[in-house]
Image (cartoon, rainbow, N blue to C red; front, side, top):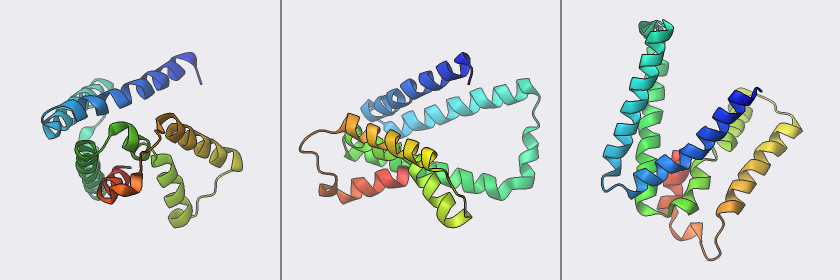
Length: 154
């Protein structure tokens, strides 16, 4: 990995919790989330046009586009509901645990296999995220609805 790519990955990792915190603090988090999504669409659409990509080629895969859109709606709803109901520092590690979900689903449903070093790396990152956010006295099972919403956002 080049230094530029590594720096972009680190910048992205640093910015990600910031926009979650900004949405949580907003009086209308739904509007803030929609504004974020529209901004990302404009930026990525502009980039695709500048790069000369054919944006209409997606018509061949409309079913995947609809599935992706439904997933994004579910994620947005679950994220906003989790942020409204719960403490960001408690539920953020769960929301960001998608590598666990991806590895589990691809193993169980798609027959994908993973090396022990990769699985150990995923486990270490997830454990580290939880330990960094751990606060004594926080009990995730006291609010099962918020816990389920954070798992859906994952």
